[in-house]
Amino acid sequence: MNRILLIVGISLLITFSGATVFASDDGGDANLNPLNWATDTAIWTGVVFLCLVTVLAKFAFKPIAQALDEREKQVADNIAGAEQANQVAKDLLAQYQDKLSEAEGEVKAIVEAGKKEAERAGELIVAKAREAAEAERIRAAKEIESATDGALQELAARSADLAVSLAGKIIRKNLDAGSHAELIQTAVTDFSKN
Image (cartoon, rainbow, N blue to C red; front, top):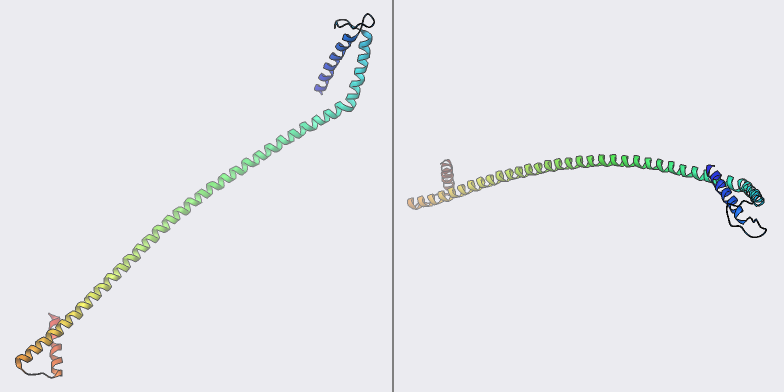
């Protein structure tokens, strides 16, 4: 409303000063001196101005003032809405940062659990490999022992055969198969004990 009064005052000042410019003292010549005052022109200019201000006040100033007030209210509402949206965005950002922090903690925990699981799996694999190596060593030792026993028995049997053959040649007598088997068995037993 103060703006309207300021505009009216400035318009009134311009109007009255303009009216004196075109007022004439000597019946038709325009006196361009702004200090000369023509009362009749000033009165009619004032009346026209008041009529103009009245018409403008009724049809222009009130709608303009209402439009300005509505615009001001709309701007204030937009600012309030923007502040509210900004606050909501800040809250969402804080929530997302909290979730991100939680996710980072979960990722660290998962990685840590994965490392521990990998270590346990590695230890289990190493233990199984050791067990397998030990079982293989035991099996190989048994095979070696079995092969050694077999070789010793074969050696004993050949030695016995050789001894019997040698003894037979010495005695020049052929032994029968039963005596021969008994003699071999006795030689193998004696050889195994030594």
